[in-house]
Amino acid sequence: MLRWPAEAIWEAVAPTLPGFTVEVLPQLDSTNTELMRRARAGRLESVLLVAEEQTAGRGRLGRQWDSGSRAGEVLTFSLGLPLRMADWSGLSLAVGVSVAQSLHPELRLKWPNDLWLRDRKLAGILIETTQVDTTRYAVIGVGINIAPRAAAGLATPPAWLQELEPGIDAPQALQRVAAALVRDVQRFEAQGWAPFQAAFAARDALAGREVRLSDGTVGQARGVDGRGALLVHTSEGLRPVSSSEVSVRPSN
Image (cartoon, rainbow, N blue to C red; front, side, top):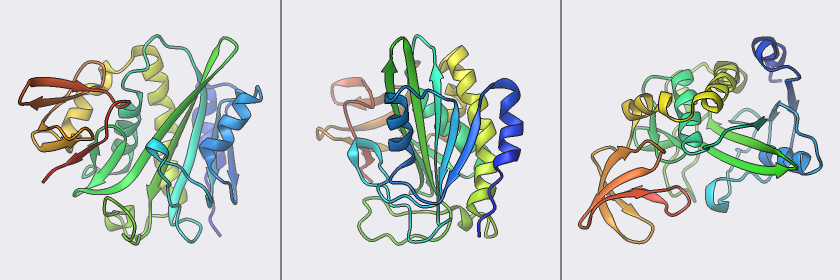
């Protein structure tokens, strides 16, 4: 049986986020889907929702996120928060920075929302928002491979955290990332993307590499700009690419 550190996380977060709660459920279709359902029903609580198993996990662009065949093989959770900020640009990158810094120095960030270990995907991030009256509610979903994963059917080969730390389990990984993630999202709400840009650059998995955009354009990744857009040097010059326009994969 997995022993989740819900009380320890609550104690670390609650002083700066009144009303914050931590929920751990044995099974859900998707933690993001559940929090979006709640928000649309008017429930805009600050909550960390963990599912031991997901039956319909989702990734970016509607892709399926496989949560594994047994509880604890993948850590899946979503952070739901009402946020007030003028510019949301770069939020997924800031979340990636936070999670990577909490987990391990070897992890790299693949723009716009994946954590890589040696060019294999260890974790993914999915951010969704909804507007309820005057409040914008954000749901920040994170999936982290903990134990060995099969590569069949995956576009990018998987990596897992136990490669780096053989004894770590999903509850321990959650305890590492949860409180720091809340603090970093609060920092983003107050200061935007700028405080995270240097840390992203230090872990940028694409910097200096040839990449192929979803429209077929090939160029060299040149980091990200002040709004979190990927900069790609193409035959037509430097091109900023936003996460809503393209999917990016290394071409070599």
